[in-house]
View (cartoon, rainbow, N blue to C red):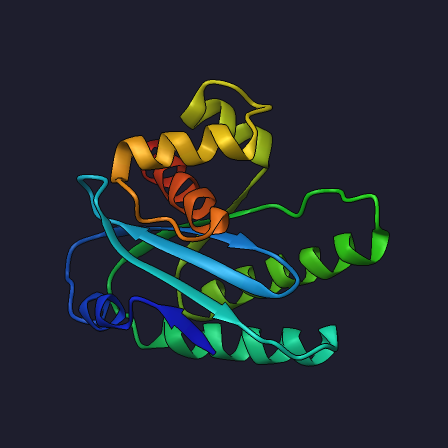
Amino acid sequence: MISGNKEAFNVLKSINTPTYLGLDCSSRAIHGVWLDSQERILAMLKWRSSDLEFDTRFIEISLQFTKDLSKIRVMTKAAVESAIFIQNPKCTIEIASVVGGVRLACGINHIECLSVDNRHWKKYILGKGNSNKKDIKEFAVDKWGELFIEQDWADAACIALWRKRRIE
């Protein structure tokens, strides 16, 4: 199921200028934020599944994400946060699977997608590789305003910003 600003999704389908997509993954959802060349947020979208079984969630989320990307014809450069090591190996593997699914979906849709370690984008964007959730949210709110209902959208926006600034 896709959630977020569906009107903005429709706008994305009609834009003809380059965009930058930041993606943050969990075992339950993919959060995506598109920026334009002036670093303004164009869209914040989330693909999720509420199924209790990871294998079912993974397929549902991955297929919907791939399908939705196919509808967006704007030139996009993307970055996805690499899976982080979590004490629970099962969660680490699940997140790594979703990240791999995102990279495959981008490839299928001819979107260049880089993976980036969370410490790297945090150092590049926030100036400190061990920034915490509060630091990220404060930066995102200062730059874009009170748009971030979920922390994962603030992370995705900063990842998109890293991708955009990496190109310049």
